[in-house]
Amino acid sequence: MNGSRASVARLTDEILAGAAGLPERLDVAVFPTAFHVSQVAESLRGTRFLWGVQNVYPATAGAFTGEISADMALDLSCTMVLAGHSERRSLFQESDLNVAAKVEHIGSLGLTPVLCLGETLQEHKDSRTLEVVSRQLGVVVEQVTEPALASLVVAYEPVWAIGTGLTASPQEVQQVHAAIRRQLEARSPELALRTRILYGGSIKPDNAATLFAEDDVDGGLVGGASLSASDFLAICRAAS
Picture 1 (cartoon, rainbow, N blue to C red):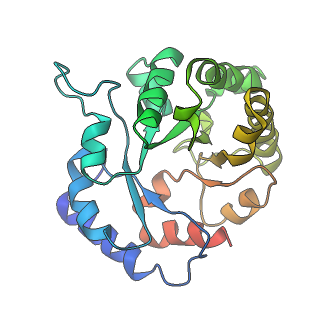
Picture 2: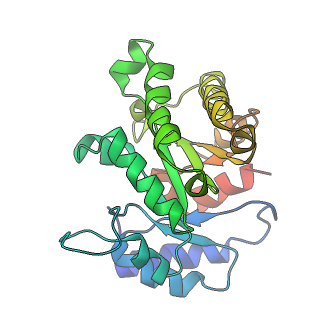
């Protein structure tokens, strides 16, 4: 929940100005607030950049005051939607079943669901990381239909590393990503191969390349660093 029309315009302009030289095979998407999606869409239309929204309600329309729908996102040419971000789970009590319903709804409309998974600091200290991530992913794998999983992206975001400056080691990240890949493979080998697994958790220009070098890390879900165009672009370049 950041930004004004002026700051969003400035950030978008700076990202576009610095985009030269980004790896050609790199997909870059931004997720502004719902208020700013239309503005960002107009700025980025016709460029290499994609855009999406941070959350939707899993219904096409109806009496859900204050919510936005995936159809509204499509109307603004969004291609991606976040689902299950740790703040949605913790602050708004979204359950694993709620998140699975959103993934089904998003994917069934042809949008790409970006499924966020991750453990809290206490769960991490209790060595329950793989247990928690497996549970969160398991509900989606069990509940969501194959068509809705067609373009699934998974983002592992350890809650204890979001905005704290703490970062999981590359070895820890790879361990979790490999476990996610194996769990997807149990549902479908093709699903495991095509699903991109991102890392999110205080990813910064100085650690991005090391994290991206791990076998099962396919990119990043960038948090605070995305509010700086230079930092965001440096992370993007690290993907080369």
